[in-house]
Length: 546
Image (cartoon, rainbow, N blue to C red):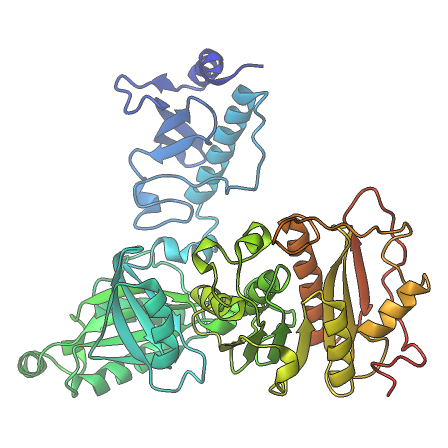
């Protein structure tokens, strides 16, 4: 096959046949630059091709210049004239035939340009709106009713190089997120308003982007004729108050976007009002385009699976913050545990030792710390606003705070009996554990007294029922000297156990009642002993039949 520079001569020959010539000045050693014209139904359009000499990137295409017909804005066309003709992931580049593949992409670009010149693809502007909007970003952490008073903060921290804002309806919650980010934050003397619109935005084909309030109102009138009067009403109400700025967030059917208006001083307002009629003194006010980026807990929890159940608003208790519980707790928070009024409780009496580091969610920096409290701190860095509490004690010495779900991630069979015996009557219990030296991982969900409990299953297994694998599992222990014996298996097994338990917890939170006993055989040397099913309560079980 032809690779890299070896394919360049053949590609040059093909492109020269299409009227392209190698540029006299090559701007970069990484790209081969050619000039020529694309043929469209509206006539030829001059362009510049930039071909990656290694063929790792698709050809870059720039219109030189952008035709007047495509000004001031057109879909799939950047402000520097670069044509976007194929999104990543929508094609597979054949590395064994780079010449033919590159020519096919260039032909595709020519087709897209022809459609643009015909005035087609205008609907795509709505999808590309944020390519043209947003001089700065505003992170929106609004959880409650959007009619509540909102506060805006200016942000200055290293991970955001450009100017940014934070918008919130709960300063205490948002301050936790800001603290994790670091940097400096200052509350602005600004009013914030949310305005609803029935239309998704798209760039204007006239003056774009809008530079002042008058241009913005004209653009909004073309989208939704009811919005401009709402905007003016809000700004007029602010103009009589001692505020420096006004932020307006437009809520469209697809997403939110916004803009900031710097309010003139009281003296300037009087001067402007005298020199204009009606609201015209407001039209010259400069605006700052603001891209709204949601960072509220509801969005972070539901974005990946918007229609699926999650653990938000629920009270979850995880007993055991070891090799399974550490990963499971993190997955639970990413599924909403501890957010939007919920609570996640972590219970473990042990400290993190050097022997734990090889397969634990925590790391060297948490050495000798209590696992529960260290895990709480670690997870709050990922979800600062989550309501998480840690108890570094034995669960048998306390009374649980009325959880909706108890998760036993200890892997301790004896403790599993105790948890089943004390809470099976009125609380659902999810047990998650690893069998043998990572032979299989299992989870069992007991619905408040119905079905088999963890002790029931252990007794069934001794009678060779509902076993994870058909073969016998030998006890494997290692360790020496003063180190206690332990069962060896890699961290990947812990992760798979946590994932299996998390899937069961998510199903419990939803309407479906899928198999309560689930097994995943990991070792290829073993064969599955039973299908996923719903074992019934075992007669005479000392844990759940008393």
